Image 1 (cartoon, helix red, strand yellow):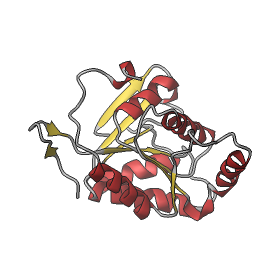
Image 2 (cartoon, rainbow, N blue to C red):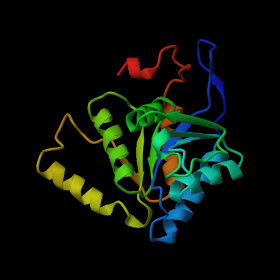
Image 3 (cartoon, rainbow, N blue to C red):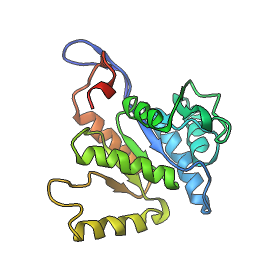
Image 4 (spheres, one colour):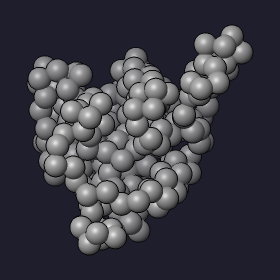
Length: 211
């Protein structure tokens, strides 16, 4: 289990947070909901906090409820206009209501140490694409882990290979996305990245001023 630690300067650093991108619906395959439940349990038992989109529906709600049921901490971030449509998860330990979708994504980025992507729709795909583009352009080094449950993301992986073959993803602009097949492996990869990096104190200025 990861715990609060002190870095070499003696400053207390916080437990790591992982941002989970996933669908606001359950999907057709029951394995998706089961995977979200398993992921939430492993996140909590590993001493990691959850950052996610703040809703109660679908995979989003499943992973949040699982984290809480396993004794973990949940931070939900949701734009005001979606609070009714996605049924805001009022049981979260902390809720942040934003004005826009962009502010939501930026806040999720600022409050997390990496990303795990479960099955989802266009919103999930857009979140994955934006975080991956920022990493391509060396705007961050946070891990991006695609959890390919039941090969859900296989068509995307085929498209990414096609982009490489056609040199739209080319040397110097490599796609920094890792692929796993299970939630257990995804969390293990996240922990490997966290343990490698030097602990950082909470910044005095918002990260958005540094982008």
